[in-house]
Length: 50
Image (cartoon, rainbow, N blue to C red):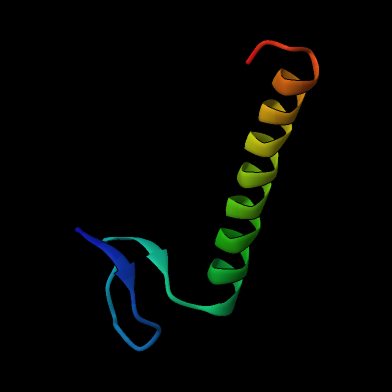
């Protein structure tokens, strides 16, 4: 099983396909996760848990 499939490959056993939709979606999810982590840290500092 391959993790990332190139656009010109003819395979069916892959997890992600390397195209613009997948790269934009991945960048969006990573950005949201980073913002959530920053929010948790900021709320912990604001409420004096850290």
